[in-house]
Length: 350
Image 1: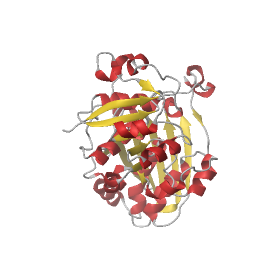
Image 2: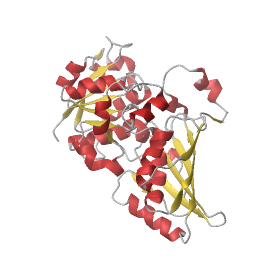
Image 3: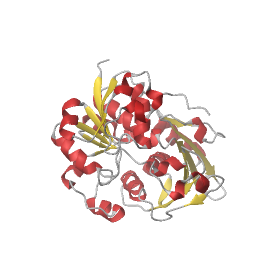
Image 4: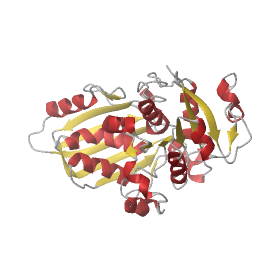
């Protein structure tokens, strides 16, 4: 397997940390460049002692120099906040480098929608039409050809994979979709924040950003594509006292004459041939511990005949499948590696 050189912009956040863990074990990738303005001058091993004894530990952490990154790397991961990533992507793509952006800057196809939800003017709207939404189950062939991939958000990954088959197959009424999702505290990032301090999160459970979470238009964008028309969802996130993981319980009104056999047929067909989607057997519901540290999205369906509701439960690791692991899959597809290269199928255990 020919080794490819990768760079990482924004190495100090949780997604950057997770990418280091994954690339370390990749048989065909070598991390040759890592950037952080705050930690420039150190080595990766100084930031993450678990790297001691590996060649990655000696990689210097530098301030971003996009021309140098483009010259040194086959692909660059952008693990920086929205508003920052778009500037980096423009310079890297212009220099001929392929990019996987983990921020929200290129996920939304409409720049007015982006401006409305993120309160930020887009600095390079000319790149938005060519950015490929990096959900491999839906856009794998386009990802393979892309110069710029917009890595999906964590909540949207769990929600879209849960509802896309039902919406696309016309199993549910698209006007009445509800997503009740719970995430671990790492979903808020690594920055200091009172709301995610241990004593604020431990032994508590709370909802937040009801009706106004920024991942809402991303979910609506992709489910509207599945429905063939614009739809609106009710997306309701919650914070649970754990480090990593997302569990989304999604509800839709079943259309007449749709039964459980038909639902299971549609979901089984959707999961078939998709290495990172596991459709669970009847009576088994997903748990976050089963996917911790993996790129799996586990999905289960329940047909509630009494209320004529379809209930879909999906479960991912927000840092892996919801961010860095999915970014690695996208890079694998872009560079011609197997989708599962560098990714474990066994969960991290306590």
